[in-house]
Image 1 (spheres, rainbow, N blue to C red):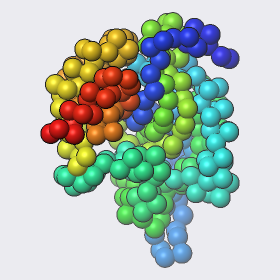
Image 2 (tube, helix red, strand yellow):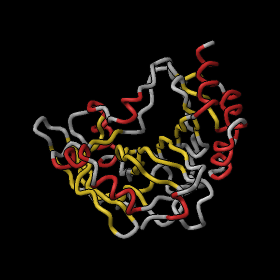
Image 3 (cartoon, one colour):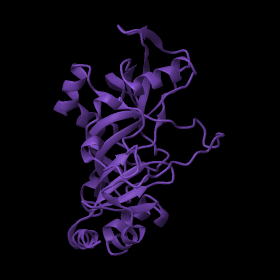
Length: 279
């Protein structure tokens, strides 16, 4: 059902989101094990990929009908699913080596050789988006994922990677995100409980074409009413403002591990880009 309250929200802001994962809630023995033609083990199981009708741990809430409509009308995803090539990665795509360039292509098109799993029979069941997951037997990431599940009894979790619009000040109980493109669901570690032992903070690498200027990011927010409202609504703190990319996007690394980019617009975009070019 369309949300009239968000259609005219002047603060609605486009962004790139890498959500922290939702638990698949899979029983440790709830999977099938197979052997590939070259002798590698892999597994298959049903999983919850995303949940709805409540705010997630990052205080974001999605409309299931919006997300399903986007996926169902995406020719690329539908073709990939039909050909069993809708792939996800082990962890969200981030450079492995300090100084390596941050690739926008990598963010929006999963890398075949980093594939950890394939997604099929994706569907909405009640307030959950589910799918059949098959770990990849022929990639290093796929074999690592399979080993953790089969040998170590790990319960996998999944995290959506998407493009959309952030909707600040959405009514309580209503979605504050509008999806425009779903990329995939990556396999990502996440504790089942907030107070689980082994509280490990994510490491932020300095990617090649991203200049981490926290002060510039704060300046852009201070000068832009739209960004001030977005940060206030989504409780983005100054410490979570990482910097500004060379293509003029505000970079946010949330304390909960989620990451997203918010494109700058208008005069502040021009000013920020000129500052970066002058460095």
